Length: 468
Image (cartoon, rainbow, N blue to C red; front, side, top):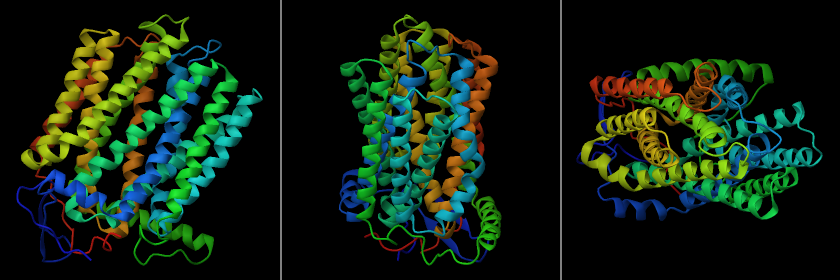
């Protein structure tokens, strides 16, 4: 078990008085040295196994997304329009946005290792069926439902990873672990996407090629399930939780647990404010993602040359991944020197500057450069927010809070899709939208800076078992 950790120069925050008692806690989670902390993280066998499961799964995600993008938006037979793209985004996220918090309660009651295993096995089977439907040319409702279920399961999987992370690393190593883990996952997704893109280049565009790419994704999910099996059944928590009783009683318990988690989050002001920042930034990232696809397909390349459009999209997303990788390197150092709040504000302002430039100048080079900076800013904020949430909530609520975190993420993308339908033409040229996002992110930065310091009340000495 861990006691509270107090180190020089706070990254997360000094903690105030616990709302449920007279104790005062200090949990300043700053790594004393990035290189030393990196070794401390990687020496944990449990962490390495958790990371392997994530990398394999997200490589599958990259291939899966390339297969879907090629099938629906970069096929010579199918045009990319704002409404089609936006509704595809929204339809893939709305159901999980609604049911996500219920899944979070289950993350706090079921073995999280079993959740990682089960979601990957289910996705393996579903993606294989999707590939079969594509080969047969069945692009109707059954395929859409399966794609939707696969994407929803992925958010459940990622929430389980985040909730389990504090069980395999020390509290003082969370900043570094949160730098490595999602960023390495992003890089793995890019490698998976590059592999899918390479297959499309070699085999040629067509539904048969898309099916092959999807089967590769299914193989990666199966490998991730095998990696998850190497973790102990209870190694990722939750501590002392079990689901028992009739289904109806469990449903009531789920609803009651959601209310408890909401109350817990209201008491943890640092986590609540961090989630608000995430929501605001993700609206901007969602709009950038949608406009990047439209611009690449219809404006910044010849609409008749789908391969050129897909290449530009791949370049922009690769640049965003490179920015995320850079964030993993600089965030632990700058967060230690500046503090998490200043770092988050700086990232928000950098993202705002990107939107201003896009409103004024729009070329392929500017789009790719903007993706690089936005990738750095978005990942820098994510690392900070992950650390704040992990150190601000009790382990018994962590799964629910991280699933709520994913719900905020998804809801922000849905909102971005709705804005796109109303304000973004199919060409993707929308200077007014870029300007509006710049204003939103600037105001978010000012509000976060003006708020109370990132206090995380309630972090006691019992954040979970020692990492294994």
